[in-house]
Length: 112
Length: 111
Image (cartoon, rainbow over all chains, first blue to last red):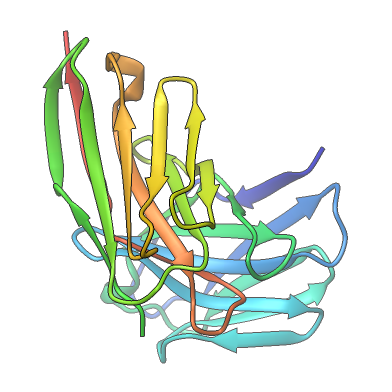
């Protein structure tokens, strides 16, 4: 069966510090991978998606970047965090477009 | 871009009561997905609807996609405290590779 791991579960970082969140999927190959952010009152916002190694599509301009160094690894990064980067970050995978996505347990990021 | 509106935003029901959550799209839905999220956790996939008029059930939860494929409803029969959480509807994005989501409906079931 397929599993998705996301860590850390919670993170408190000072403004201006770097960020690296990691997500890995097991039990499947060549998944589509996604990073979403959930902020209070704003719903679930798609940040990045990837359909293959090294292929990253950004949905909204922002202070974040994503990378996919391996088939089942997806990383969300920032060089300098802003207060507005606080939120609940969710990684997800799917078998392809038009199919359901499966989510990790999320990372609660608080920028102070 | 496609927008998904969910109603109501929040709902408090007494245990044992039935309830309905609606999801309305600004465009034709080619895939409509329902998820449940417990507070502070990831989303759990419930079911997917593709065909107009389609209806699916998962335990005491039933979802329908209307004939015009622009609205879906999620119905819970005889609600229980375990049904509490946030229910989100999602739809295939314009790119076709990802899902867009509504803002969610927060459900609380009281004893």
